[in-house]
Length: 206
Image (tube, rainbow, N blue to C red):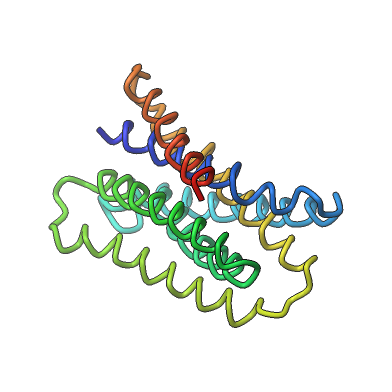
């Protein structure tokens, strides 16, 4: 079940990047895109190193095993919020599509995080994890609107490239890596493409 949820969430995130973020930076200067991606990759590698250190040292006891995924998703939630804020600044219609797409993403990422938690944790503690994700996303939206409204197009492009890199890292180095710890099944593979198709069709309809 955990692997299936992670595959579905990976498909959703992948589609959000392919359908919404990459087209918005396609016409930008290569240097701008490279800078945004480079900063995004460096930031996510730093977060990955931090999460591994937490797991290795056992900080948080039984919670430490899921720490890497949860920390990465938490950062992703904040970035998603910033991206929603930025897209609403650029164009309301695009902002609505992004918000809907990322809402679906958040749903499955929240489930992926909860199912990765130790079975012995209480329900209240488990529910606190997705609740925290919601707070982080709301904070990201606020920060995005307040700091980037009226910003230069180049600055917006760097932020979008950074977000794309962070989301791709989440898919390739967290969700699919953790999902691959159990044998691959036709169901899990199918769910990846179902998640991708959900967001891609949402973009087409929008």
